[in-house]
Image (tube, rainbow, N blue to C red):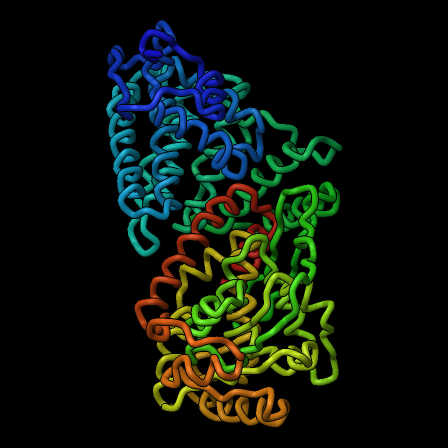
Length: 572
């Protein structure tokens, strides 16, 4: 079948991609003629969408759209795909963002690089079509133009490095579209309205980051801003408008009156009191200026409910507990145990990486470590049920509780012979993450990053190293070495000698295999997670947090930001 002779609609392309019936071969998009400044073609260009294009449109529809573009209008994606066959501008923006996003999650670096390049090429084609339209008042007020601007803005956020510069150039197209729509007094309806609310979220987020006033006039958006009962998307739009007003209040160069402050506070409280149950925070903690916490911590998701992941069930017995502190060959042990036939060893990185994420449960368990609380085997199994061994943070911080819960498991005390070298390694790694401001900011914009970062940086590490003021660097510097020694002594006192192996990575296979009654494998003992390994992990965590944060920005309730912003204004 020659696709150039058989034009397909977007839906047909997506169905064909799912069924695997699309032709394979050269993945290049055939050229088509677009008149300068023209937004739509006279006929659909389905024949110009090849196998790769269909794959990328499917990726947008099934992976990207729901968390990032459909929060305030679930029909956004359907309308975008409906118009794309006749709108090259919109089509190229969809292909660009899908290519770039997909490149982040491919295991093969060469293929990932190809998709990143495709994204850049689609982006350049899109820009070449967009620029001539900026002077066409009819084109820039079309919903497809504004939708394209929001998609390209997300592409821009996705492509900007964490510590780099974000010029927010694609917000300018959105501003031009909104301003011209206001000038012509056009109604906010249909596709234009769906794209508007995405643009508003992007405007607010960029305004907060740059401490400026949002440029979108929320008083002209044609929305019922009362507290009358309505659907959740309208409630989300109401609070977005309130958020924009609060950000304007905080960063306006003009004087902000007490009356204005009181009015905003009352309206926020009214929204919070009458909002649907689906906006209930999954976590809330009051601000504590004495501890350097100036804002309240609020984690709110728009989902109808945010239950914890289902409890796991144990199918195999817990066999090995590796209870040495982090930076004591824990990842090397994990790799070695896998080679010895232990099919899953739960590592500290699991707390950050695993899906679904159970880190909130680890947080609660840590909060219960008062010396009198017992964490039962059944409770541990809810998280560790799929594991036959444990190591790193989970194994060491909860060593006493795990030893009590799994009395038949063998215990390995993995340690470092050179205490100074261990201390230096901990400072270079744990302190590095704690001082990474980007990870902290990103952690506030999604449920999994929130728990993944805070369970370590606010609870586990300060508690383990007795950092009463929350300063991990100071805690490790003052207490790290004696905490290490006391931890090892505690393990020796808890575990009978016939069930305990004191082991260092220099010991290699022989003593470990003898203790576990396993044959010695061929090949050298694995040595992983040296300095470069940790840096790779930190980069991967940053990437994952960025992805989740971009989603979180789309669905974050404004109450937390708005309340914190008012507090900020009153403090300064």
